[in-house]
Length: 168
Image (cartoon, rainbow, N blue to C red; front, side, top):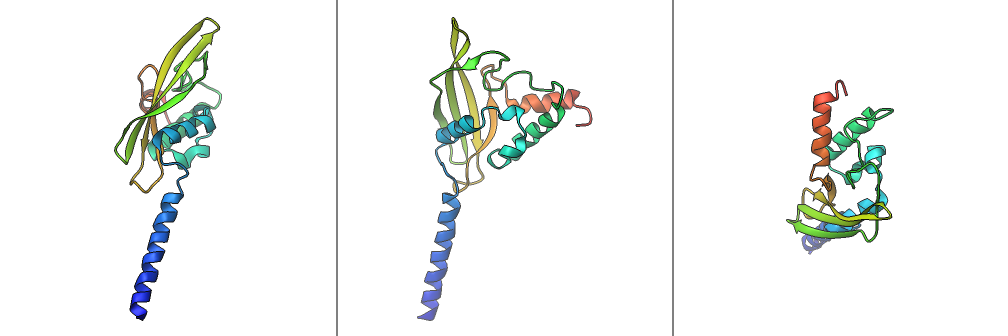
């Protein structure tokens, strides 16, 4: 009888730990994760990446960290806002997010919005966000962003620093 109680108790603890691990992710829907990232971190590419280290992959963190350290007082790899691939203009409303694919550990989310250059120039644009996680019980992490021109943010930063980055 004591062995049965011990086994049941152990199983309850294991299930509780599993539930806690999956409950630690506030959102499991990739589109909702991408929307949350955008709404909370729209200026992520010019801010200290330490602020978002826990919600991006290590590769994206390494690229953003290198870019952030380089960009203190100078222009480095990023010359435009990665959301718009432009130096001027704004993202209008509505901003819409839709999951394009989801394998359970990799997901692709499409973000569409009207790009507003001025009062008379508006055009629909799309950004693709790539999310990853190690298992279906872990939280989604932003792995890369492909802007309206179709260029990978991570690859752009890595390539520039390989060619021009010097000692950083």
